[in-house]
Length: 244
Ligand code: PEP
Image (cartoon, rainbow, N blue to C red; front, side, top):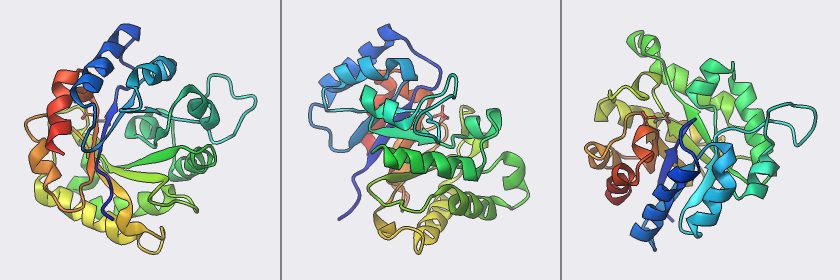
């Protein structure tokens, strides 16, 4: 069975209770969406977001700790995300890898914790501009994929997002050939690591907008998008959802 396409929005550290009205707009626009729709708001908004998402839109976190509970001031456990209504969690976003020193091993440990709590982990991979310019993209992605995906990952509990660091929030995107090359590599490298590799959803993320979504979604092995800026307003996110 072909994997169900996924339109995932990452609100990052944006939004407040009033901004949840954007979810109401999406629920009204897509009472029976043809793809899966996910919004990952700041953690404080997960519970009220879930109440408004009406089982039409999934809600996710943006990070979790690798431990189930304990003395970790300021952190959030995967089970707490689940308790608040999340069914997904984004892990290893480049902003966390760069800003919080997260390594592939950290990401894999967090993904294991997410799986144990019943969350789907969206594991982010991506090269920097310097790495692309140096011709290292495929090696970087292969290494990140190998190191960040834990034992026990399946198509049901894991989604991979290719997010070139230089394309995030910049308005720049790779060419369709460059995206196709990386997605084909990811699909290939999942074989042998995940039993149902062909079913794992592979998202592209990095300056996806209403104007480029159709072209990106036509690329082989692109099963959806992880969207930052253009997920904040339903008016921008809707045409991206419609393009899937
Ligand atoms: C992101 O940060 O995950 C992202 C893809 O951001 P943007 O869509 O704004 O480039």
